[in-house]
Image (cartoon, rainbow, N blue to C red; front, side):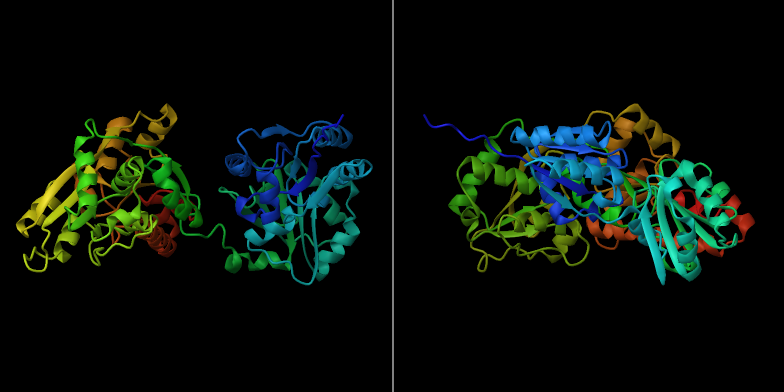
Length: 526
C-alpha cells in the first residue's frame, strides 16, 4: 500500500518595516501573498494590514499574536505540520524583538522549515522619514524593555553623533531620566515622531529637558531621535513636507476608477476617501450595441470615438461576448477625448490615431477632427459609443463637419447609494480639505446623495464643463488644470497647496490666525 505523503508547510518571520506598506521588501511581499495563516503583532499598523489583506489569498487567515513567545511558536509549528504556510508579521525587523528571537529559537529546535525576512528597523526608518540623519557614532534600536537600556552607551552615542529609539510613548519619561542621569546635556535637540511613516505622521522637536511635555498626547509606539541630526530636520524633512500632507481629499469615483487618482494623491501625502457617486450598468436594450459591433466588423465605420474609459470597457465586453479581439478593429481609426481613455484603448493593444493636444474635451476633439472628405474618406460614418446621459455637443459637431454619426448608448450611469452618515456629515461640515470632480455627473450625483461640500473645502475640477456644473450648484471652483486628465488634476491641486503654504508663510502671525484659509496647510502655521 502506497502511503500519501503529507505536504510540508513553511514558517516565515517577516519584518513589516516601520509602517509604510511601500517599505515591505519583495521577499516579504512574496511570503505574505503565499501565506495560509498570518499572525501579526499589535505594532503592525492597520493601514499596512489592510494592504496585506487585499493582496493575500482569499482563504488566508489573519489573527493577532497572543501569549508568550512559546505560545506563538506552537501556533506556527502546528500550522506548518498541517501543511500550511505560516507567517509571523512583526513591526520593524524580526531580530529587533527579543520575543521574536525566542520564537525563532523554538522553531529551530524542530524539523519545521523556516526563514527570517528582514525589515527596515522602526527606529532607523522613522528617523529617515522624519528628516533626521544619524551621522557619526549612531545607535538605532527598537526597544521593548526600557529598563534594560545601557544609558551610558546611549550618552556616548549622543555626544559623538545621534541615536534613534523606538519606544512606547508611556516610557518617554523613563528615557528622559536615564539620559539626564547619564550626563546628556538637557539642551540637546530631541525629535519625537508618532505614527511613523504613516498617513498622519507628526514630529515635534524640543530638547532632552522638555520632550516629554512636548510629546503630550502621543500614544502607542513613537520614535525618539536625539543629537545633532535633529537640528537638520527643518531642511531634510520630506515626508511631512509633501504638498498635500495630511489633506483629507474626497474622491467621488468608484474604487475601480479611483485607483490612479488615489495613488497619486497618496504620493503627495494626501489621505484620499473614495465615495462612489455613480454606478455603471448595461443599456436597457442591447440591440444598438449589437448592431454597432457588427458594423465595426463589417467595415461600416471610418472612426470610433471613445469619450470615457467606461465606453472602452463596454465595447470590449461586447467584443468578448462574440469572441472578437483587437484584430477586428482593422481599418477603423480611433479617437479618444483624454489620455486616461487612450490608455484604456492601449491596454487592448491598439494605438489611438487622435487625442486632442489642447483642451481634452468634446470641443478640443472637434477642433482637431477633420471634416468629411468624400474622396479621402470613402466611409463617412462615425461610431460614438457613450453614456445614456451624454451631451449632444460632440455628435452635433461631427454632423456639421459632414460625418454621419451613430450615437449609441454603450452604458447607463445611475446614481449610487448615499455614503455612510459620517461621510455625509464630513462633506457638509468641512471635514474634507479638498474634493476632486472628474465630470459633471460626479458633481450632480455627489450633491444629490451627500449634499454640497462645505465652503472651506477646496474644489478642484478636471475641465471647463465640470467647472460650469460646479458653479451651477453654487460651488466655488479653486483649481482647474490646463489639460483635462487625472494626473494633471492632482498636480494642479498639489501646486495650489504649495501656493497656499507660501502665502501663509509670508503672512504675519496675527493675519494667519484670522485667515479664511483652512486645512492642514493653514494649521501648520497657527
